[in-house]
Length: 235
Image 1: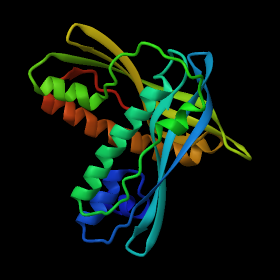
Image 2: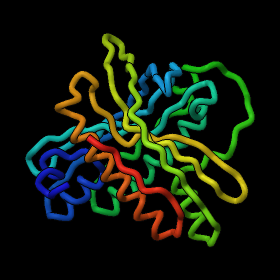
Image 3: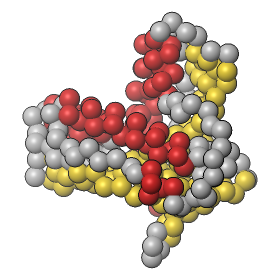
Image 4: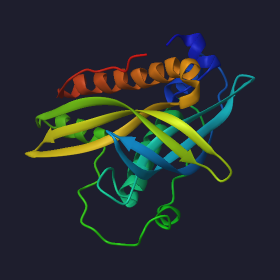
């Protein structure tokens, strides 16, 4: 992604940081949304909730807006339970806040609320594995432990349900299978998305954003000594 593209049409936190590094004034305002989504995963339909943050502001005198999916939660075993998803979303969000502030970009550190999310699900207790993110496994590897990550990429069609309309989206999802400390863990992360009925217009940018995020992740794997299969999305 070239500098002009990053500045004029930012799609990532790193685009904002790059613009600030070039001496431009950057403002940033996060707003949250939790959207029920009907997913189709390998021919198995299921409903989940995605945790979205829309970042708006200005770079110089130009307005920008982009959204980022921070987690997905549901009441069954196809993805993390909502209580786990909220914690995962907030951890990734706090990491982005740290990077923005380190670059000199002020941002109000709002977080997803567990209480608000839980009302969407049945109130029931269940045994859960520790809430680990991919960054946790990177840190485990840095401590000298052997970590292997299998990467599986998928385009997952879904329908988002808003108050007054529905929106068909295709999510560029990465399925991680992590072998570490004698255990195997599986989880998914959305790296980008595009409006399904505008595939020709939006998919190339979505693929570019997702692959940029993957490249940054692979570089972190390399530094930590994690073994993995390097995969990228194709247009």
